[in-house]
Image (cartoon, rainbow, N blue to C red):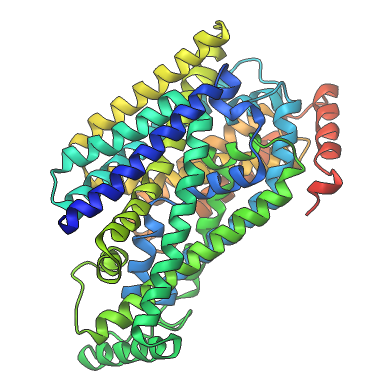
Length: 506
């Protein structure tokens, strides 16, 4: 068998495993709660690994090693910020959100939680939030499909459309039928695959370069060679601070703020069995995140050392992970490593498809007072997944850079528009519907203007001013429009008490 045949065999087995898990999840799904939220039965390990895999898309395996290879540790501030943000999210948001969403009329989506928490009878907040999720995530899903097409095109020489449709088709199948359980259980398998790849590749490469000490020496030698050839472009890749301004470092680390408002991540908190599971979930999730991030960073350094020693220059630094897999392993094992890249892409797509479906059915269709039998609602949920997937596929047929650029913008948009509202909903009794709507609009508008203004976006990532604007406006408007509501106060107190169960304490 040829090398490419071995690699395609490995990827084919990976696809078969994903479809088998999707079928298993399909057998467990009976009503809308199951389809959208897994019936709130996710064990902490499943919730943690699912949240991690749905968050860490292909950038963890391609973007991070490539950035470290090209620029060094300075590029790791985004990773540091994300780890800190994820830890804060698991520690402070997860237990309260799990308790509050059940207390507030068993809310199964973020927009329905906002409506039930604030007693918004107009449905404006819920519909607006659901629409924002639907629009942004449709493009977000499309960008993932673009990544899948580019992956097959660059790795196997297949056509872009064929690769894109293959990734889209397999992901759609297990998500369409398996729903939230399908997305979550496949996420666990994908998280394990990503972890194995990001531990194995740097370890094997470090051994091949002669050990950790020799790796560092080779990296420093590569820096010296670069600096000698480029006197005006000095680089020190082992430094965490060299070459970066204070604002640039803060801007990179500020990516962690986005966690509080990402619907496809925080919905895992809502799906846990109880608030008490948040502590175990945090330990598992953050451990996975730290180890995989460390593996991605080390892969960049190990790849730099190895290819410098071999006098090989990579045209695209983001291929360092893939090139090392092909050099270090048998083609079948390299195929499994390639599957890890697909796992990172597909886990994010599936989670976002489910959130889009819930926005269509739960936050828009049912917000208008439409009801149906449990089986029909599940059918509508599947129709929602199919609809969003088809639109995303049509967008991905003609890939445009603006779609990929929207990923970073969408992260900032969700983080700024929803993040402060999640925090205020869980920790401040006085948040009101007008305050939430005004804050959401302010955060989204500031992100939009800031992100499209070159002078501003180059100085600071737009999530920082957007997050601050949403927080300040929501608090100010709430103080001006607030009034006492005994039911809101009672539910808030019940949530605070329930989320402080001994097993769930930080």
